[in-house]
Length: 564
Image (cartoon, rainbow, N blue to C red; front, side):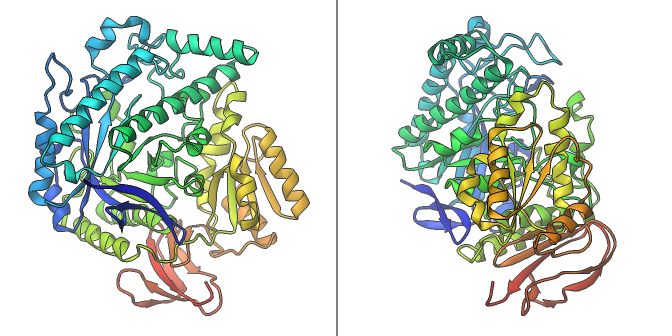
């Protein structure tokens, strides 16, 4: 039987399968009838995810977007035929594939209709009639546990059990564990638990307590379910989930702001998110993280980035109001290739795993895209175990508890969500953490940036520490959220931080690689330590640190310097 675990080595986190470190480069599609498994198998990919639905229901409750395949447990008798077919399609082209099913644990409509007391108080703002399973419902959790047991029992008895190397649990809105109801998963059962919590801890009933409690409840439920699946697999396989979008979903009502709890728990091995949608992933900007990824690595968790990278072939699978949005459409091929290189480099240099999410199938069905996929995998595989420690001198901190103190999300959006675009253009690399991890990492950095939608105890402690240690601290709040990348660059440079590019550019940097995405056309001169030689990461050709570039171009260099 296979085994898998997370291993941290030389500054990167890796998935280890059967004793072998792998690069964590995977492929997945929702529409397996339109899959490109053969294309990716031919390119050398061995790691795959496959979508599974325990029950037929809405995947997005606000837009009434249906699950894409029937639920295994929709009727009186379970039906695994579609799941078995999807696994067979992968194994037919890649017999030694390593597969981690993505299991949507939402129960079918019939269960919700029969259990009105186990649902949220209301539906989302766009669809108030759409009440869904409440995260506080023990009856819901019991249903999920029982059907996860049946699903994993089926896999144990199957011919392909040796190909299953882990599980991803998906739930809530769009499978990402944020609240169905746009209101924190608040329902009769969760409120019963909340009232008990208030009484036990002698707490006052406030909006801050309410939403903080529901975020913790959501994180606890995910951990409990992941722990249950680990037990079902005799603790041999990794288990993870989407969660912790604390720099993307800045409303206190999302139930996503209890990541700190999850990082302290052993039940969750990896945490996932898509690339941020801020700025519609436009050209000439960073495509930032949703999650404070460096806290994950600090706590021994693997970050799995969902590269749902739009291409010139991306288009909606059918007519639906949810798809009338620019974020669903890609750019022309040249721009797309530069974005793909950015997304890959973000994972390579920061030590993450990732899957190319060919959402509806055929998004990468192009010779140039697949040539890139092949080169990217070869480079990722050859880099496993290489020196990958971050060389960033700037640490950014976010206190996820700050959101609970605010009535609305407008300030948080400017100070946190939108600020990532400014940070990304500084021409200086940075790492990003939860503020609760400050004491563990503060000595690694020359300067700190705090994203402060409001004052909190943790922000005050960071400020006091910076003063005591003589470190530069840049506090971003509602009064200075219009600061520019140039102004930040000058501030940090004045404080002794090494500025790599004196003009706006996206920079990632680790011991072995340097990535740059140009924000504008012009001459670029990269300031690197003396004696540093840079080579094209794919061709190994020596490159100059000074060059002209059009805006929106991506470059990945291999660094060679014995001093680094």
